[in-house]
Image (cartoon, rainbow, N blue to C red; front, side, top):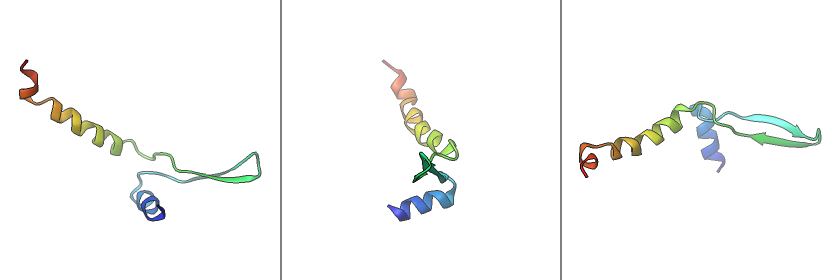
Amino acid sequence: MEGARQGLLQKGVIREERARRWGISPVNRYPEADGTAEEGVRAKPAAVTATPWSRRV
């Protein structure tokens, strides 16, 4: 898990946010840094289903 997280951080897909919950417990969050990776993944199925063969009914 650590290797995957570090790889995503290095590629800039996610970013690390460090904070404290209620001023006591340390909390690390890893929100998405850039939405282009998700957009690319979502575009692939849309491109496949939008082929000329799928339009003929």
